[in-house]
Image 1 (tube, rainbow, N blue to C red):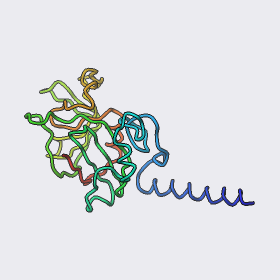
Image 2 (cartoon, rainbow, N blue to C red; image 1 turned 45 degrees about the horizontal axis):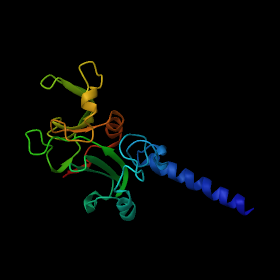
Image 3 (tube, one colour; image 1 turned 180 degrees about the vertical axis):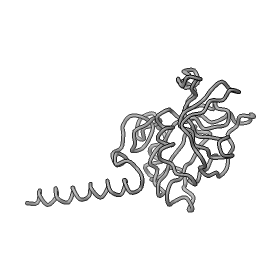
Image 4 (cartoon, rainbow, N blue to C red; image 1 turned 120 degrees about the horizontal axis):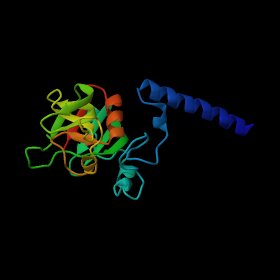
Length: 201
């Protein structure tokens, strides 16, 4: 009988988790941490917390959320971009839910990614720049309405990933935007709402 009681308590708890995540606009799979990729709890690229390649895991586990989340960003989504680490961290209600390897612009050059507080603006599925002979998928603007973006690794005119540019993920390489893996860029595009605060430092 005790086993039946425990089983019955588990089912409502799981259903509640699915309902809460669905209402929050996150896929129910977010409740199940992934083991491959570069994120916390969702499918995608980047670092897998707890993996040997993530030397900051113990600090994140001890603090719960990694970098300090400003009080005004503790409710809803919040995005932190670390230029020194080449990492994007996404928080929901003050809890880190995804970590993604990125490529920002090269500091100290005309291609440096701007730093400070920004807010998510408009978005689109694809663009191509004749000036740079590169485009990207799944772009989301954080400054100047389509000038500074989160977007996928670069693609050519036909929409194919440019391998030598994709290989630069994790090091400063962009023209000021924040590059993400194709999978992470799509997740960001589909998940992060307009008006979300973004801190870049």
